[in-house]
Amino acid sequence: MSNHAYESAAALRPHRNAPIALSDLAQRFSLTPAAPADAQGINAPAPLTVTGASVDSGDIAPGELFVALPGFRAHGADYAAQAVEAGAVAVVTDEAGASIVHESCPAIPVLISADPRAIVGPLAAEIYHHPSRSLVATAVTGTNGKTTTSYFLDAMLTAHLGGCMMAGTVELRAGGLSVESPRTTVEAPVLQRMMALCVEQGVGAASLEASSHAIVLHRLGGTRIDVAGFTNLQRDHLDFHRTMEEYLDAKAQLFTPEHARRAVVCVDDSWGAALAERIARAGELPLDRVRAYGGDAPADWWVADAAVSLTDSATTFTLHGPDGVEIAASCPLPGLVNVQNAALSLVMAIRAGVPAEVAVQALATAHNIPGRMQRISQRDGTRGLTIVDFAHTPDAMELALAAVRPITPGRLIVVFGSDGDRDQGKRSMLGEVAARLADVLVITDENPRSEDPQLIRDAILDGVRSVRPDLTDVEEITTWRGDAVRRGVELCGPEDTVIVTGKGHEPFLEAAGEFIRYNDAPVMREAVDAKWGAA
Image (cartoon, rainbow, N blue to C red; front, side, top):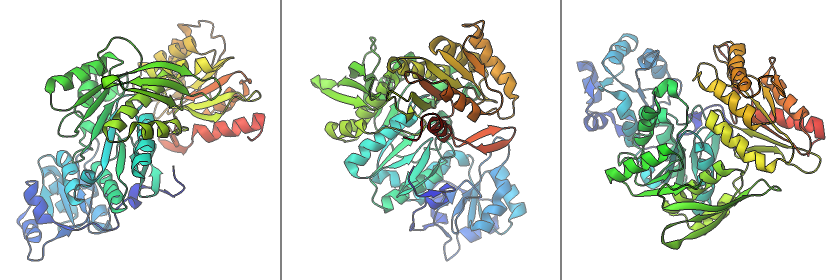
């Protein structure tokens, strides 16, 4: 993140946005006044205009439109009074929301949409004058690798165009400002106004992460994506999507003309191959298939000669492409999983107009992505290698441990836990993977949320016992996650590697209804300095 930090995304607004008449928006999006008085206000001789939009009543600036969405637990219209007090000049909502707004704010004009969530993206794009049309925009989706790939793309697009907006899991960055991101893909009005700020300040590109939730909930509506990329599909979010087939269906919506102009898909797993086949069969988007792991899946681009360096933890490889193209590249992160991310980002960047030589040079220096194989200390004969990584699914854990094993002469130590109030089935699977692939296990808490942390750890230990019935070289830390991180470093010798997985970049630990400020990286750095001295 940059040094210019703010508490929220409130600062990420264009400084000047030409107002648009509310009556024009009503006409273009078939919005109907909730009452005759509203119609008089909307169609008054001096037209009511708006200069922005938000779905968050706590993030409204004077002159903006509040879009009150129905939610899973409450209706946004319940907060209309707060939005009006902050300066909202009108409200767009559904029938149920309109009656709530009229009770709390009888004087505010209200427009009704049958499905306000479906139109909020295009509506915000109209209000901010379709900023994505003035940017080179890429978006990455998939279970794992979105953040790493988007940061690789950020480096490549910046090298080519001089600047790039970032909107993803770790940060929201636009126009020299950066804030912690509240989610992988922000709500549509925030995304649109960030892009408008970039257009205003001459930033030429945007690197976005697209979660399956965001795609289903229309957060990318109204955004023109020049190149959409797919990493992989692994077990996650089944509490939301129910089945892997539904999960893939959600991702596939990104690869349609409504959202994207071109598709680049990794075909290393069966889900990626199925997605590529679906896109090809539809025939609506140009498609590039990328294969990083070998195998025989049809591919337009494929990786060969991948080799991990023990000294700098980087991976070199050759990317073969159409018409005999060969690109020699170096990924600054270890492991085939990061070669996949690097290959995907290279093809996406090339298809977005970045010269191959510029993309390769930028990739080689795009290291220390927050919480993604983030090196806290490098092996130097005295210190061990210490890493923070976001791997929080069984497949991601397997890939992470496989990535660092070749660069670990001694023992591989993993510190990990699992989420509460999420997919319970993966907990024992995480324990089994760790017991099979690591030498020493330190089991701790991740984000227990409303669950009893001991029950989560017990489920992990059930998986561990399936491999190690006697729990050899397994420790359970029941006090605090930071204690587990410090214990991992205490166990680390010069030839060993400690990898702390699960939270990565996350700035909070969520437990018993509280969000406690916490991040693995500074805790690990403090433990490293305490053991070996500051570098």
